[in-house]
Length: 379
Ligand SMILES: C[S@@+](CC[C@H](N)C(=O)[O-])C[C@H]1O[C@@H](n2cnc3c(N)ncnc32)[C@H](O)[C@@H]1O
Image (cartoon, rainbow, N blue to C red):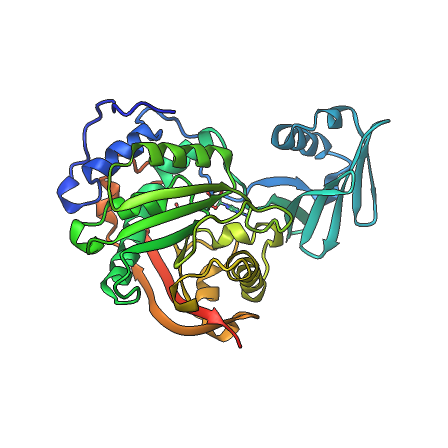
């Protein structure tokens, strides 16, 4: 657990413009966004693993090194490697794993019949390149994320929260229960902290975070411990994978508002490059079985679902999906109304002046693509 006293680090020059509000700045600082961090690369570049055609062959060692560093499978160093049809098989006397290309552009890694991960395949000239799927960041990558992405995401999320909170959607309710899916380093709670007092209209926001990464969950714990904004409370921190239907911790609180900020690509992790229809199925399953079936829906048997995305299409084309979300719809959920829909660029100079903004390529094209839907059950 971190200490409540913060090191001194000069504030961003544009504090008055609200990007680096002092409390949020200090929170980010203690959560790990210090000036000294050295980057190793750009986090969201899809990682190339190997050429399918070159294993066994020139890329065998490359694939073995990846399996050792990513999943700690030490025995592959000594494994024999064979390919038959769409299977690559690695084995020693006691162990084996397979990488099975089960369709044109996807493969899955299985150890002892357990599915471990999925990869995405793309032809480049006469070679078939295998890429890593959406990664769950851990360790220093999470602090790198605080530098590279949180400063871009805060103004984007604040922009959307302001629009929603101006509306009368929650009536007179004084306590709004939020499920923040794919919370990362508590970006949505940090964005709430950047709102001005009058946006709260004396309401309190009780946030349950849902996050798969251990390190990000530790950063969320730090936020919970350090946060002094009386309107915002993290009531529960759920460490879970929303696409895993075998295990999910019970939801203690009800849900009025689901917020998914920059996490649609994340939920399409196992179904890389799937269509909007497939992502809609995952969302439907999660909301229907986890929230509605467990009677955790609060507000008038409806809930607000806010999806916020940037413009990247590295893992999933969320812009296309959000444009057609009403047409695609959901199996069990009815879209009662569209509360807010927008596609806007945000003034980039704000963000470049933030001392935490450290994207290696100095790429700053913050965009907010967002839809907020009121959803209920289909009869
Ligand atoms: C791009 S980050 C967004 C973080 C934060 N909401 C923001 O806007 O900065 C996506 C997050 O989703 C998490 N994630 C990925 N797959 C997940 C899954 N299946 N279940 C829960 N969280 C997941 C990742 O660990 C990551 O923190």
